[in-house]
Each structure stands twice: as structure tokens, then as C-alpha cells.
Length: 328
Length: 131
Ligand SMILES: Nc1ncnc2c1ncn2[C@@H]1O[C@H](COP(=O)(O)OP(=O)(O)OP(=O)(O)O)[C@@H](O)[C@H]1O
Ligand SMILES: [Mg+2]
Image (cartoon, rainbow over all chains, first blue to last red; front, side, top):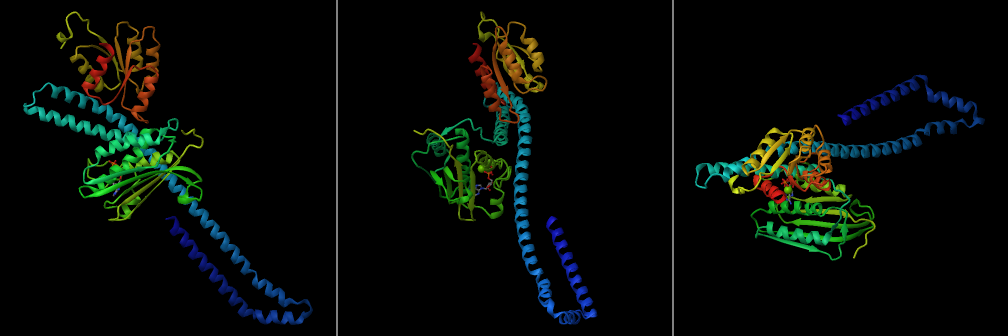
């Protein structure tokens, strides 16, 4: 809407400018302007009027250059503003969703309590071959699943790092590795390579775990029943050349690579949107990458996803190291 | 159920504070069926008034209630002369329930449970504190 209006103004301006030129031309034509000037300059030859006339005629040249420069600057600023506004709008949207989700989760947790506890008590009071046993168990299982969904939403809505906690990167990775090895089916090879001396990060180890587990679980889901591999590389890097738009400093770099089916660019564009999922109902809430995004951003880091259809997916995450740490 | 508690044992008294009536009733049922005596209050204000009466072995309180903030209630409960044991329960709000429960433990709750919990979880916690 905005840009179409701008185009319209531009066209109107063009029409006006052209009309002015035509009018000037007609006027000059009728007044025999050139003849007049010619006569004038001949008459007062000692004043060297020719040069002044030429000078006046060439004024538009520097003017045009200045206008061009100014408009380029304005366009650059305009683009920056738009980008900023889009980021802000996105943050606000996430914020609003987070608040909404948090409130909803609280209600649901209360509403689920009677369902879970009462169905459990009833089931425990019934012998296993009673026809009602299975019915009660279904209620209990379904409500317990709903509880899991709610806790995922809550995790998202509170997905900002509390910076007063630190985690030992290597130790967290060891715990994470153990957990992932259990979760990873046999058709998928999972390799976790980490450098020594990774030191500490200013985020809780649960959060760090979440940052790694979510993309890995996505990769496991994406590969599905095919044979595939997932490689996680964790290293400490020094950035001083503005690579990947990063500020100079020390980072922990985490790369999660899979050779699964990858994504179309439409999917990849929305991967960080809360509640965006391509999975069936009950299989994905669409919060995994939104959680990772929030956690990494609030830790002051950056993350990138690069993927192509049928070419797997790379998730690259940078988390800045705290400036002054005594590392063993 | 009560018989299994043993004849010589006095029934333990529990005060339950929660603003959601369905939750209140469900938790009451869990406790009563396991042989406890239960009194209920639907907000922090009422809860504190009841808690002032002697004889409660355990108080279970929600920590997110509209009338009187649950954390405030908790602090006051723990400031009493002979404070009873307290279990804090929460379904979480803006932050995750885990955060609220952590705060509750710092404020003196003896144990905390994230809603929704099952009856076995609740009874385990209760037994751990008062049996
Ligand atoms: N490694 C991957 N390969 C292919 N597609 C992926 C990959 N990772 C994410 N996606 C796509 O991005 C979508 C969003 O991922 P996200 O983790 O945010 O949500 P989800 O996995 O669907 O649900 P949740 O993680 O909450 O259970 C997925 O549904 C999937 O389509
Ligand atoms: Mg996921």
C-alpha cells in the first residue's frame, strides 16, 4: 500500500515536470527566446554574457547529482526503518503471543488437574480386565499428553534467558549427548563433536540443552525412517572480521547438520514463527525453533538456518562468551 | 483407608488453599480418600485466617491467586509462631510454573508441585512431609 502510493506520486511528479518543460519550450518558441538572448549578448559584448547564460544553463547538472545522492540516502534510511519496524513488530507479536500463551497455560494446568488426578484414582480402583479400565486409562493418557503440550507452550512463553545462571558447556553437552543417544533411533547416526576447553556460558544449562535438543529432534523427525546422519559440532571461535554480521569477540559456535529432506524456502522462512509446524496434529506444536530463537536472541547470540529441498538442513548458532570469566 | 492408618494414629489435618473450586474439590478427594482431614479456603485471605487456628499439620497453597498473592500468603504462613509444613502448588503464569515454584521454595515452602499433578505424586509429597 505504502509503496504503490509512492509510485503514484513519482508518476504524477514526472507528468508535472514534463508539462513544465513543454510550457517553457512553447513560451521560448513564441518569444523567440534564443534570438532575443543572441541579440542581447551581441549588443553588450563587453559584458561576456555568453558565459553567464551557459553557467545558468548548466546549474541543473550539480543539482541533479545532489538530488540523486539525497534520494539514495533517503532510500537507505527508509529501508533500515522498514527492517527495524519489521523486527520490532515480530518481537511484539512474539511478546503478545507469549503473554497470551502463558495465561492460557496457567488456566489449562488448573483445568487439567481434576482430569488427570481423578481419572488416575478411578483407574487405580478398577481391576485391569474391567471394560472401564481402558476407558479411564485413555482419559488419563490424553490428559497427560495435553499437560505436555501446555508445558511446551509455557517453556516458549518464558523463553528468555535469565543471565544470572551459568553453565559448564562441556558438562551440559555430555548430559545432552546421553539424552539424545537414547532418543535417536537406530537408522540415524548421531555424532557429537566438541572441542576441549569450551568454558562457560551465561545461560542456564537447561536452556543450553534446549537450544541443542530442539534442532536435533527436528532433524530426527525430518529424516524419519530413512537412513541418515546428524552431526553436531561445538567449538569456541574468535570473531574479528565481522563474519556472519557478528560483533568482534569470543563465541561458542554450535552447528547441527542433517542430511534429511530439508525444507522449501517457504517453510524455512517461517521456521522461527511460533506455532508454525508442518507436522500432524499431536506430533508438533511448532514451538521448537521459536524457543531456540528466543533463547539465543536473549543470550545476545545469532542463529541461521540454511537448507534446500532434498539437501538437508544446517542450523548454525553463535552464543557470545561472557567477557570476563576465570576459566580453569 | 482410615483403618490402614492404624487405630492409635490421630488423623492429620491439612489446610488447602486454592481459588479454583474444581481443583480444590479434586485435591480434597485425593487427600480424604488417603485418610487425611481436610479444611479448605478459596483465597489467601481466608486461608490465613483459618491457618491462625492451631492444629494443622500441613498447608497446601496455590501461589497464584487473585485476592491475596500466593507468595505473600506463603511468607505470612511461614512467619507464624509455629509454622506448619507447606506445599506450594502452581500452574504457572507469565513465567513458567517452575520459576514460581523455585521462588516459593526460597520463601520457605517445604516442597513444591507443578500443576497438574497426579494423586500419587501428591500423596508421595504429603507422606514425605508429615508421616
Ligand atoms: N532439520 C529439519 N529438516 C526439515 N524440516 C525442518 C527441520 N527443522 C525444522 N523443520 C521444519 O520447521 C517446522 C518448525 O519446526 P519447530 O521445531 O519450530 O516446530 P515442530 O518441530 O513442528 O514442533 P515442536 O518442535 O514444537 O514439537 C517443522 O514443522 C518442520 O517442517
Ligand atoms: Mg521441533
